[in-house]
Amino acid sequence: MNSDSRRVRKTPRSSFDLNLLNNDPLPNVVLQEIRQILPFTEKKMNALGEEISRLQSLLEGLCVEHRRLESTVQSYRQAVAPHRNIPNELLTEIFLNCVADSNGIAIPLHRSDAPLNLLQACSRWRRVVQTTPELWKDVRITYDRNFNHVLCTAAARDIILRSAPSPISLRIEGWPTSARFCKEPFDDLILPVVNRLKSLYIEASPNSLNSFFPDTSRFCGAFAESQYTVPRTTLPDSRECYGI
Image (cartoon, rainbow, N blue to C red; front, side, top):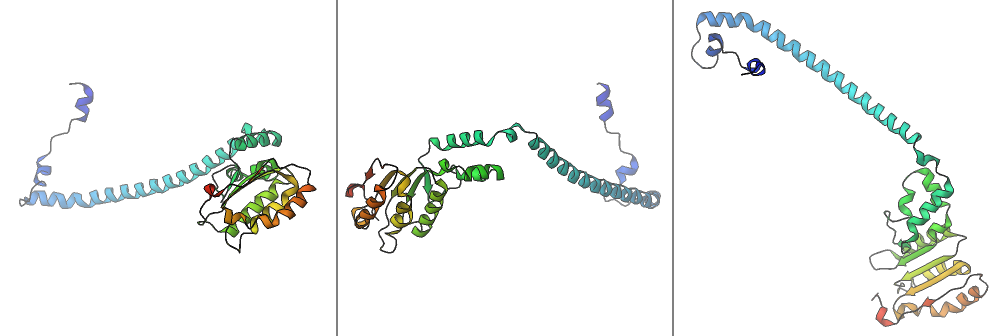
């Protein structure tokens, strides 16, 4: 057996210790010895408890200081990180690539989609995104029973305003059928930007589009004065009806 094994071997119990392992009456000599050593043992135990409390308090303070320094180090690392020196012009190109393969900004909005997710990174990215009209030039609006039409139109109007003065592509699916909301897409979204429409796609039921046709004269009149062309306006038949 090696020396390590000998060091961890338990020492045999004394007769005094063995007397404490059962419920037999103890001899008077043992009782007297226990009464003598009990106060010293309790004092030593209390001293160790106090030392443990002191060390725990010290450890908690060290942990707090460690977390503070960890946060400071992280801030310093961010301060010297290479991405802070990227020019805004290059950031803009990167952000444009983020939305290049998308189908446009979907409304109702989803915060996880570009460019909305870029707004949440930091204040600098937010400023760049908000001041880059090209990031907001493709808008896809879906009017559905499950969403408030007024909120959808308001969100689309805000996105369209951010796209100015860039040419804009607008896709509207499920034109509202309610008499209260049927004019909103045309009056609030299409007509104000007709002079910079790049493309316009409308997909809805024939009943929904009936509310649009009476206003086409206003659309054509405004379009005649615009500097951009509309490649195609799609008015699908009933097979493409959304059933709303």
